[in-house]
Image 1: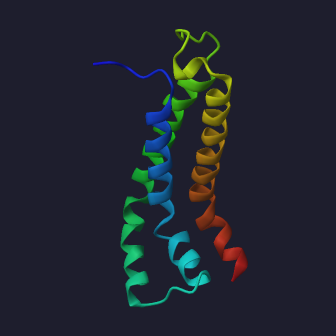
Image 2 (image 1 turned 60 degrees about the vertical axis):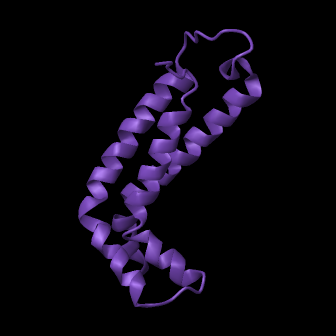
Length: 116
Protein backbone atom coordinates (compact mmCIF):
# COMPACT_ATOMS: atom_id res chain seq x y z
CA UNK A 1 0.00 0.00 0.00
CA UNK A 2 1.46 3.31 -1.07
CA UNK A 3 1.35 6.10 1.51
CA UNK A 4 0.61 9.61 0.30
CA UNK A 5 2.95 12.29 1.60
CA UNK A 6 0.83 15.20 0.43
CA UNK A 7 -1.69 15.49 3.26
CA UNK A 8 -4.69 15.51 0.92
CA UNK A 9 -6.52 12.63 2.62
CA UNK A 10 -6.47 14.12 6.13
CA UNK A 11 -7.63 17.45 4.70
CA UNK A 12 -10.60 15.82 2.99
CA UNK A 13 -11.53 13.90 6.15
CA UNK A 14 -11.10 16.99 8.32
CA UNK A 15 -13.19 19.14 6.00
CA UNK A 16 -15.95 16.56 5.81
CA UNK A 17 -16.01 16.13 9.58
CA UNK A 18 -16.08 19.91 10.09
CA UNK A 19 -19.03 20.29 7.75
CA UNK A 20 -20.86 17.45 9.48
CA UNK A 21 -20.11 19.02 12.87
CA UNK A 22 -21.94 22.23 12.04
CA UNK A 23 -24.86 20.75 10.09
CA UNK A 24 -26.91 20.47 13.28
CA UNK A 25 -26.56 24.11 14.32
CA UNK A 26 -25.25 26.32 11.53
CA UNK A 27 -26.72 24.28 8.68
CA UNK A 28 -30.39 25.19 9.26
CA UNK A 29 -29.46 28.86 9.70
CA UNK A 30 -27.53 28.92 6.41
CA UNK A 31 -30.34 27.15 4.56
CA UNK A 32 -32.97 29.58 5.85
CA UNK A 33 -30.70 32.51 4.98
CA UNK A 34 -30.50 31.30 1.38
CA UNK A 35 -34.29 30.95 1.19
CA UNK A 36 -34.70 27.22 1.73
CA UNK A 37 -37.55 26.30 4.03
CA UNK A 38 -39.49 23.31 5.13
CA UNK A 39 -40.06 21.05 8.06
CA UNK A 40 -37.19 18.80 6.98
CA UNK A 41 -34.67 21.43 8.14
CA UNK A 42 -35.63 20.59 11.72
CA UNK A 43 -34.38 17.05 11.13
CA UNK A 44 -30.81 18.36 10.93
CA UNK A 45 -30.87 18.89 14.70
CA UNK A 46 -30.88 15.11 15.11
CA UNK A 47 -27.14 15.23 14.36
CA UNK A 48 -26.46 17.26 17.53
CA UNK A 49 -25.48 14.22 19.68
CA UNK A 50 -22.83 13.31 17.10
CA UNK A 51 -21.29 16.80 17.00
CA UNK A 52 -18.45 15.98 19.46
CA UNK A 53 -17.57 12.88 17.43
CA UNK A 54 -17.39 14.91 14.21
CA UNK A 55 -15.31 17.62 15.87
CA UNK A 56 -12.95 15.01 17.33
CA UNK A 57 -12.54 13.37 13.92
CA UNK A 58 -11.86 16.77 12.35
CA UNK A 59 -9.22 17.62 14.96
CA UNK A 60 -7.47 14.27 14.53
CA UNK A 61 -7.50 14.67 10.74
CA UNK A 62 -6.13 18.21 11.06
CA UNK A 63 -3.35 16.92 13.30
CA UNK A 64 -2.25 14.41 10.66
CA UNK A 65 -2.65 16.95 7.85
CA UNK A 66 -0.51 19.43 9.79
CA UNK A 67 2.19 16.81 10.27
CA UNK A 68 2.29 16.08 6.53
CA UNK A 69 2.01 19.63 5.23
CA UNK A 70 4.04 21.70 7.71
CA UNK A 71 6.76 19.33 8.90
CA UNK A 72 10.29 20.66 8.72
CA UNK A 73 12.01 17.75 7.02
CA UNK A 74 10.04 17.10 3.88
CA UNK A 75 11.01 13.88 2.13
CA UNK A 76 9.76 14.30 -1.39
CA UNK A 77 11.06 12.96 -4.65
CA UNK A 78 11.48 15.37 -7.55
CA UNK A 79 8.51 15.31 -9.88
CA UNK A 80 5.98 14.40 -7.19
CA UNK A 81 3.10 16.71 -6.31
CA UNK A 82 4.63 17.59 -2.93
CA UNK A 83 7.71 19.00 -4.69
CA UNK A 84 5.72 21.65 -6.57
CA UNK A 85 5.55 24.93 -4.59
CA UNK A 86 2.12 25.85 -5.95
CA UNK A 87 0.66 22.54 -4.78
CA UNK A 88 2.18 22.95 -1.33
CA UNK A 89 0.76 26.49 -1.12
CA UNK A 90 -2.68 25.19 -2.13
CA UNK A 91 -2.50 22.49 0.56
CA UNK A 92 -1.54 25.09 3.16
CA UNK A 93 -4.41 27.37 2.14
CA UNK A 94 -6.84 24.47 2.20
CA UNK A 95 -5.54 23.45 5.63
CA UNK A 96 -6.29 26.90 7.06
CA UNK A 97 -9.75 26.95 5.47
CA UNK A 98 -10.56 23.57 7.04
CA UNK A 99 -9.13 24.76 10.37
CA UNK A 100 -11.42 27.79 10.19
CA UNK A 101 -14.41 25.51 9.53
CA UNK A 102 -13.50 23.44 12.58
CA UNK A 103 -13.13 26.61 14.64
CA UNK A 104 -16.58 27.77 13.54
CA UNK A 105 -18.03 24.36 14.39
CA UNK A 106 -16.53 24.53 17.87
CA UNK A 107 -17.40 28.17 18.64
CA UNK A 108 -20.79 28.52 16.95
CA UNK A 109 -23.01 27.10 19.73
CA UNK A 110 -21.39 29.48 22.23
CA UNK A 111 -21.57 32.58 20.01
CA UNK A 112 -25.09 31.94 18.65
CA UNK A 113 -26.94 33.01 21.85
CA UNK A 114 -25.35 36.45 21.55
CA UNK A 115 -27.42 37.08 18.40
CA UNK A 116 -30.82 36.37 20.02
